[in-house]
Length: 164
Image (cartoon, rainbow, N blue to C red; front, side, top):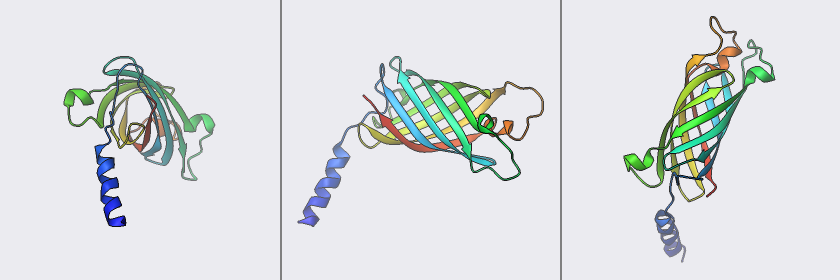
């Protein structure tokens, strides 16, 4: 009986049709980890669809796992971002479950960009990966070690939840 039910269950999962970006009023919550030089950060972001391919959102990263020689208080570890995404997965037409989005972010520490991808296994659950990079920092000149935490290239990955 198990030999029959397992293939049926796996086949049923493959038939589930999820969609990466629904457009207007689409809501996505991403929870994951940020990998960067001298720290690992917790990463959380929320995006809300304004139109067929555009979303706005908010994101945060909190640096943990710092080396002992790097002193950083709460405000140095925390970064808060306003996000703009161009969700172009449907333009690329790779797969309904796959979403691709380049975007811009305005944070407490810098102005930056990001490029990300999401893949949904079901309508409500998937995985994401995102590359974040600073384009301009607000403070000219040399940065202190704690200011460098959020002014560098990072890779994020984790789970994404869809609330449609």
